[in-house]
Length: 106
Image 1 (cartoon, helix red, strand yellow):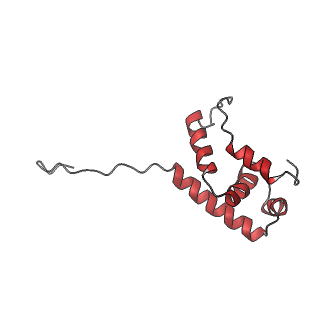
Image 2 (image 1 turned 180 degrees about the horizontal axis):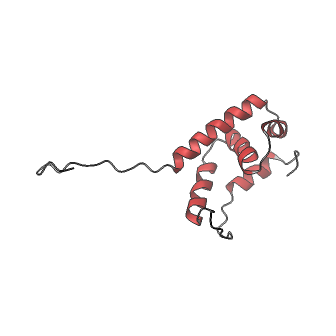
Image 3 (image 1 turned 90 degrees about the vertical axis):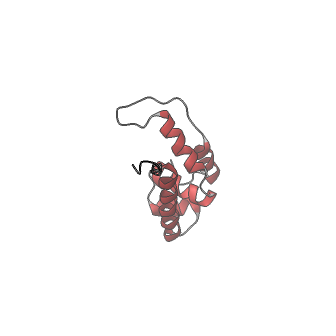
């Protein structure tokens, strides 16, 4: 990807859910991939743009800042918070343990 890729192309790419992908031993399954892409599409636009350029396309923070017309610090901030939001969206909270009222067994 060149540094002159349009932001619109980044947004389109982030919103496409591909159902066909070759499978490799360490690659997440289709359901995990869809969950990840849904979490990314829920990010605010500016955060999503920075996240996709740095984490998915492999640009440096400096390159992404140039493409997006933002400062390097802003891109780092947006990627940091995007990663936190995506992780939170993909983390499954365990169900709370309920006490049995009659036997007091957990």
